[in-house]
Image (cartoon, rainbow, N blue to C red):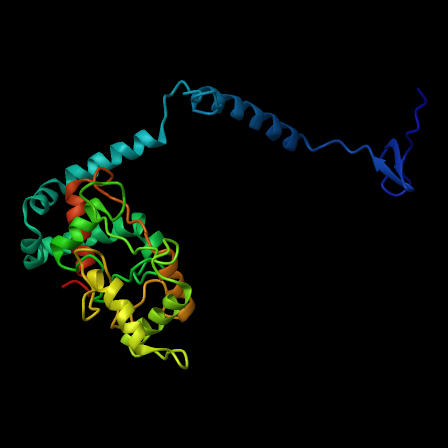
Length: 290
C-alpha cells in the first residue's frame, strides 16, 4: 500500500495521508492523560455493571454483587421517618376529625401531612393550589358536589366518585340528548333556562316558560325545585355562578346532550388511614369546607 503521509509545512506534524476537499488530516496522537482517563472510565463501567443493578433482563434486571436498591433505601428512610413521627401520627390516627381541628398541634400536623400528600396525588387534577380546572372542582370555594363537611370530604377522598368502589358516590348527569329523552330544540331551550337561573344572558326569543316546564319534568328530581342541587346525588347548584365545565350555551348544551360522569379515584388502599384523615382535614381547611 502506498504511503501518502507527509509533513505538514505549517505545524511540522505528519499527516495521515487522508485528504478531504484539500484539507489534510494531521496524525496527532491523543494526550496520554486523556487516553488513560478513557481506559479508566471503561474499567469503572465494568465495575459498576458487576457491583450495581445495571442490565435489563426479560422480567427483571441484574442485581449486582452489592445488592443495592434505591427503592429499598427509600423504604428504610420512610420506616425511620415513621419511627420519628410515631407517637404524633398515632395521636392523629386516634383522634376524630372534629377533635383534630380543635387541637392546634394535631391540626398543624394534619395540614402539613395533608399538604404534602395532596401535592403528590391530587395536584395533577385539582392544581397545586387546589383551584381546580375545567372538569376538576375548585376546593377553595364553598361549592361542593358531594358535600363539604369533614365527614363528607373524607368519604369522597376515601371512596371516590364513580371510581368502581361500591362505597363511593355513584350519581351522574344523564345524557338527555344521546338517550333521546329531549329533542335538540328542547335542549337549547332548557340550556338557556339554566343560564337564566344564575343571571346569565339568554338567547333572543327563547321561551322561558317552556324552559321551566322542561326543567321541572326532567331536572328537578336531581337538582331540586329551586335548582340548588343535591349533594346526595352529586347534582350541582345551578343558581350560583360556579360551573365545573363552563357556563357558555354550547357547553351547557353538550352537558345536557351527552351527560357528565367524571371520575374521582378512591384513595382507600392507596393511602393509609391516618393519611386519608390528614388529607380530609387539609382539604377542609383550605377555606371552602363547611
